[in-house]
Image (cartoon, rainbow, N blue to C red; front, side, top):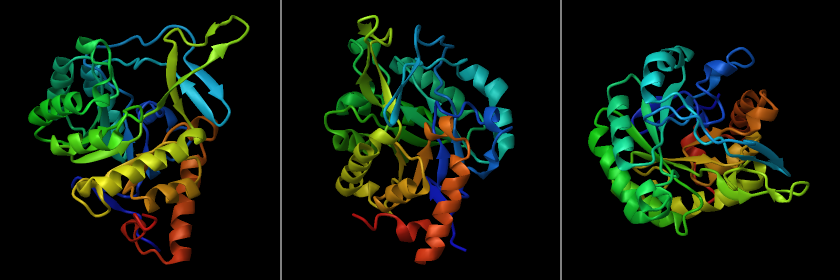
Length: 309
């Protein structure tokens, strides 16, 4: 049988499938309805330094071939995660990745310091959050602000591998990717949700109290693949076999989608929105990728990675 194991920033994953942040809780929530241990890794729900209640009003809105969300990073805070959730996550078996968010540089740095002393395996830095000191523009929309936050976190995250999660809403994603790599990212994950808008026609106003929301699901897959291709083709470190592997995200709902991402240069991939409608999807994807590799004669994920470039 083909070897599904992959290595990301020195960490061994038994397979390339990772549960995406914000769609899988802390993994324990799904353990009664699926074989959670089969994942290669699990990204925690987005964590901020202090607990957050999240956004008011409607939080989820289904669209054709997609799902819009405006949850607002509701979470119990980094300290609570470390003391109450992390131990249970570790018992599940997959690589544990803490997704860290923030609104100020200080909150990112303090959160990173706490995670650096914890037993998490890796940290995924979400730079799609608004920088409150610059009027709310996301940290990841500008190379300078991306450099600032990634460098600051890298300086204190000395004992953990650092994955930087990129926003697809940046005018020039390749420039942000290059900035993150130059600032010390061990790996990249891309992409986060696309900013979108919906109208409640009965009320004649935006569906979401926060006006815009993040779009995920099958509708974004071709766009996500295009950004992945741009990054791995333009940032030398991110090329297949390079020093900074890339984790592909965005609209994966079947094994064929996962293969597309790997062939476009992703070392691993994250599955999220698809699990909401079909909890059986992860098992189907893993089995499908394995069978495909056996049928086509790919001995490992690396032999298939990037062949479509």
